[in-house]
Length: 396
Image (cartoon, rainbow, N blue to C red; front, side, top):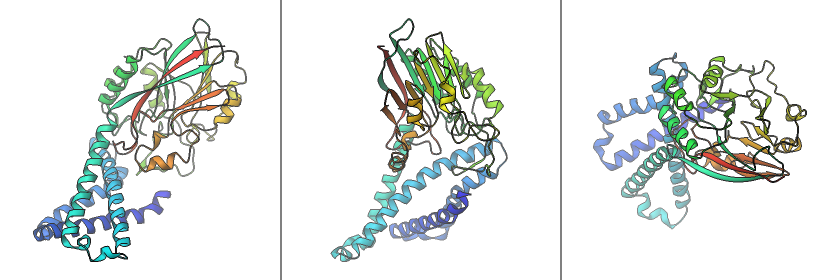
């Protein structure tokens, strides 16, 4: 429903950007204002602008996947183009009320120069964002837990989240991720949700991806929770259409993940090798239950032996105080992407208590990863794709 309110301003921005672009082209060269140039460009432009709507209504097919991927890139380009033009218009508006109004800033040459600079900078930002999103880094953290862990005084945990496999993320990116994981020689690998991008059928090579997951070398295995995108749902420009019901988890997605050698935890805990507990929480927004509810963290930990380390996997980094009060030692999350694209980074950092990184909460440590994959445009600007290598020392 939110999308219906955003559609009119979206179309207004699209049309305004087209008008401003043609104004710049005409100033560059009057021939660029001819119909033989404007008509094919307008057709291509409108096609990209409507690609999110087209992808939403198309039946599942290879063509639909191509259109959906094109639409995600379009949204990234539009975001930075609109930001640049909006900033320029603001500067021009202010300048009109100063002595600058009689300068070359408002001349034809000024229009051509400024438009060219905006076009080049927008292209460079988008290209850099695409390159940056494909470069998976490793972020190191050290955590001390004031408990004993049977038979060891140190544990190496690798945290990954937000793979969003599907329209943008395929087997090559997952291969890079697995290579980075294995380089850390992990004792335990944790996947904190959003493994899929709301569609199993959009995977480019399901068998190839499964083979990559099976390459993960982890002493105690790979454990995961499902996130709000691990559900088969139609998405239109980032918005889902559940119409108030609680969407069910996809059995096909679950079976696929389990066949990849990953143990999925749904509001349950497991004692690993009699050493430590892993508690997996259902997602807060899309738990996949009939009534849309999930168990409280108190319910999930009340019967655990709290003298042993307790690690909680929660896709969204919410209820940190409740999780700490319930006796958890480390809370591992994703979901935020750290904003993924500036200036959305500023918004995210004002929503979550721990939007990304490490946060101490009483006797618990919260670690949130910015994620391996992307949501929407295959771009990262002001953030990074990462896995987290967490060295846990037990000094109880």
